[in-house]
Length: 386
Image (cartoon, rainbow, N blue to C red):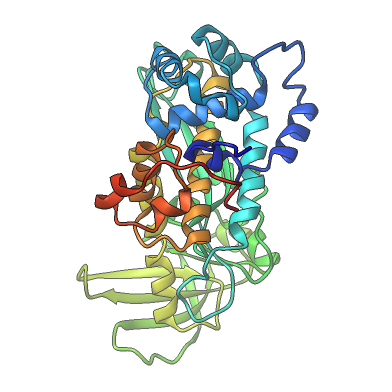
């Protein structure tokens, strides 16, 4: 007898169910639970992400309208009060761990960054997610404003968020960087903006043989210790320096490299600071320019994932929704790289949303032009795609 699969069912087959259940046991996610398990909660919140549902009532109504196609998902139905309780009480770390299990799968498929050097290339940055202070009183950011802050280690190989942490909005970027165990290996290159200029932290990266690239502050106090040959007319100067400030020379006792580079596009002179003395000055400038990719990533997830309006008001509910949203981003990325999908990630998310409960093959809808999607007929599938 043939089993009938929907696009949603095939999407869930890409999730590591065994690791999810083990994580659920570790955090006792199903303790005292009779019907609505952690896996069913994950399916429901993921459904709200894919379909852009704005409220618990919208989710309940939407799933009720698809009741005849829920059995193969392991979901018999959902009441909004049950989902509300689960979001508020079930440990969000279950879904955080799912994110990292999916990340391991994605890393095996991602293309390398566009630079010639083989060093892993990362960017560290943070973005603020605004919240209404009267609704989320635990997220006080300003006197009349609430917010949380997402800190990200962005991997340029595959455009992946390789590490995420969420803090209160008041936490400064460099404070979070000092406290966060970012998984950076020796010989990695990491670009950061001026907010991360903390010389003890930068020196700790240097001692771990991690190369950093940042913009120098205008009031930097230094002495020139040597010159690098200049081979490009856009490079105004390329110097080896040592810090001379009464405090900074003790905070960073090693040498640094200061590069003044004229950006022809912006018609502006930029000053870069790095501990890498091997790469060309123009390459250092391009590394910092590539840092803009993380800004595009933040913009994409804010515009296309449900991380600005939330289904619950507790901190646990907010973090649950954020981690499930990031799981969905990785699922989209995995499908795009696995199938070599030729269109954008946004187009892929729209295709999945419009066909989520259709009895169609995921491969079929990915190999046709979006305008011809309706021509792909519903069918009975024999098994999973991947």
